[in-house]
Length: 191
Image 1 (cartoon, one colour):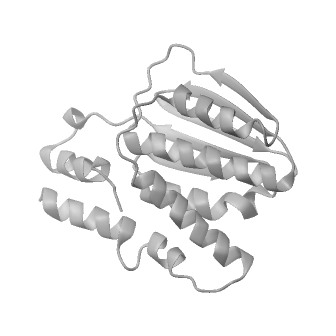
Image 2: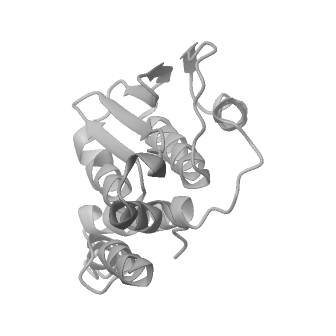
């Protein structure tokens, strides 16, 4: 049963009719198609990330150090002492999201404002981009992250990008069949 779940989850994320494959296969040269192909590469980069030897704050600090010479950056860290143990793939999602939004800010010549907070076991990374059409710039990227990576979802608004990294559910709370499905869902995603 575990193998069946893994196959179904893998097909949904990366199979021939998956959103990721359809966006990657677009051959048009218009701006939207190019952005979709770039989004697939970024999401694949996040999904293919091995174990990070870093924390959320380490990734944020490395990004800040790289980003600050190019555009203004402000960070508000409201995580406090609350425990949040991200999956390795979630750290990859955070890295790619910061990079994606940072590049959008540099292209628009604007600043990036980032706020981190943990609420009910979920890390909320709020990224504000002034003078950037966040919906047009980030919609496909956010949609792919939400579809491909486990316990990850994105909300895109006119002026901000919200990445939510949910804590892993405890498999002991589920029936054996549901636990097998959860194991497949949380399993290594590397394509």
